[in-house]
Length: 104
Image 1 (cartoon, helix red, strand yellow):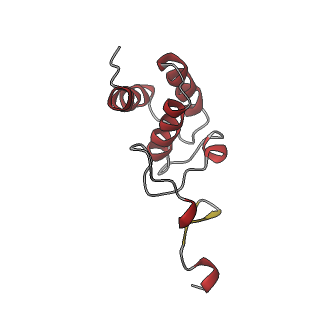
Image 2: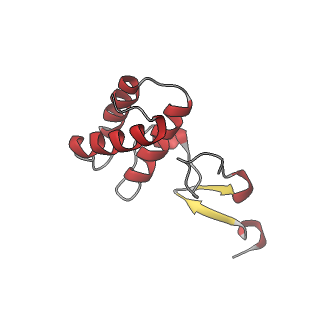
């Protein structure tokens, strides 16, 4: 690997320096989050990670529970292949409750 990419990891087609990775929030994992790419839908292997990151972003933006769920259900229709709606709802409820302490 050349020096230019020595301290970088590849995700999809974008190179993001590790120094730009965010780590201050519980919902952010070690990989960079590319919101603009995720909003267009993702492929198998990226769906769970992207759902968690997208939801975390919505929590941070103060979306209501219903707004966030509706957004994720619409987003899932852009994924190839889609997750089952039941799975999206289960993951949503798990993370929403954990991050907001709101089970209503």
